[in-house]
Image 1 (cartoon, one colour):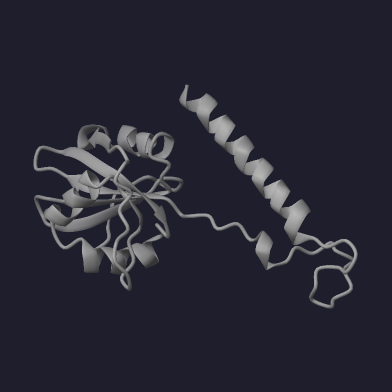
Image 2 (cartoon, rainbow, N blue to C red):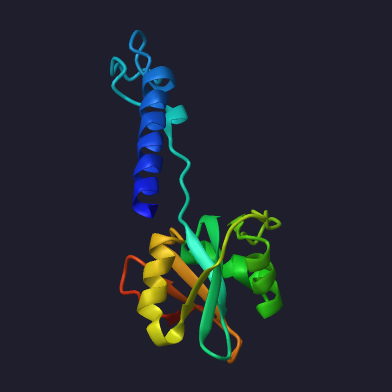
Length: 169
């Protein structure tokens, strides 16, 4: 069921991108508008896709259980580290994010926009690989950020990389 839904979403997004390129981005008669003489083979700025680097942000409980929420935009470590330092200072802040259903992004220069509808991704440190796989499949994450309640430190893992949990700060 989930794979079928993913295929449908991919097809809708593909059609939307093609539509944007065909209808708005390329002007066959005058080229791309930059004066380069390409005859319309270049795509102008309207065709840029605004996609997110998705992440899961959550906690590792004292019992080793993991719970996290989806965060859509700018989930790469160089953005998340300052954002987490500013907004996620303890487990209460992280649990609020989870309770609020995730967020559009966590930035150090703006307030968090909560989704208010997302469902958490759950796992266990005994099977961290299984949790990372779930964060990828159902949580759509490229990175995972976890606050460890025991040592009060942040850790992260690259879902498409080595999938190992490393100290963030």
